[in-house]
Image (cartoon, rainbow, N blue to C red; front, side):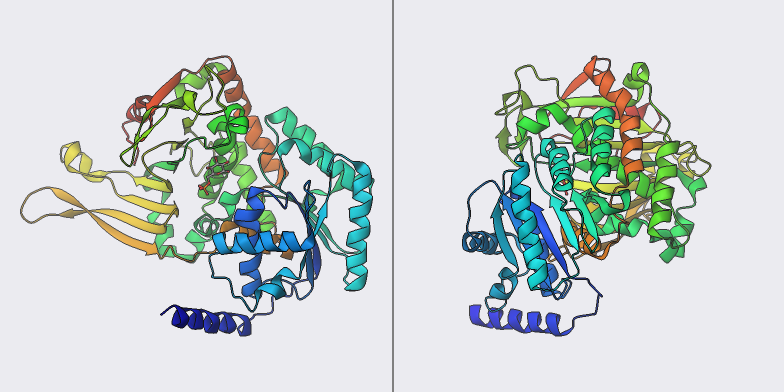
Length: 505
Ligand code: BG6
């Protein structure tokens, strides 16, 4: 049976490779800072491997992995092979693996030592000469945020960004810790790279269902008619997680849900949802439209934040029958920490399309389930004629994570009674073997397509919107509620919607 499976996989892989489309990819050197880290292991190597299997890597590419540790090329390749065994969505093909790993080299580098970059530069140039490539360089900074400025400065100083080909820089979040630090970081980066060369990863923009939002209305006139904004009463965006702070207290206890999830992922989801495009448009136009949305997001003043924003921290509780400790008892969390592990808010987008439709957003750790979704709630015409509890509003639900799907909730009359029953029309994408966000994003970055990366203006305007809330949190002007681990969040978040006659879906 095992042999049969292996044989089938091998045939499938051959088919995959022989089915190669010509993506017109240019050769490149991929310079990976943080190659010994967790992200590289879990996401980046598997993403590159799956792209390789799909023929979505250039004919000629080399990856130079950088880390503090003294590893040999061989040891580095062994580590990559291990990570593929553990995390690749496609099984590792023994016969193709050496071919893939041959593209990888390792170089120990102390990012704080400017002289080390000279050595790296020589290594890159040598590779470019041997392979007679055109000098395209992609720098990926998968490092702790405090090193990003320094690395950009050192790349610039040592001239690694001077090349005959194109140069691109991919950076991971967090992009700064507030408006001021984000601006400073951007200034530093722009000394070494132009804005069009900087690819700020927000992995939520790599999720296929989020990418679909840009063309949903255009490609589906039916959805366009459904989403006639006059008929929508509110929009709810949820990103709930079961996991707690895990081993990241060092970072998370200072970031909180507001910086970790809201400033980036949730506000990006708001922008993508509010795009509502009746036509296909270019990457630049998408970015402009997103900027228009975030510019129209009604500011919440620091001293009024308590009216529209809920923050909370998880208390002890139970998830899947297992007891869970409270946030304050997690290793590494400061005693009496006031950090938020939950955030909810009521937003208004002051443009013609969305002015009368509130957006509610929420995210939290240690909640009852893992789910990222966008729910459009429709106005409820039958509510007037029947008691409220006997009717349900129509809902259009876009599931983003962990499953992808679209559900329409309708009211259907039950012959045996005068009441309506909810009925569901449901499309769920099979969730096995879905391309990971990093595959889509790395592929786009290699092709120079920045559609699903965060432009500086989006990032800056998001921080600008968030800044008064950070200050309100800092000055305790928004109460810190608690919620039991394993629940749906604090009661205060339910009350926020109740004030407007709604409930969370
Ligand atoms: C990351 C956050 O950006 O997103 C994590 O730092 C969070 O705290 C994660 O767990 C959630 O991503 P996803 O794709 O699992 O919804």
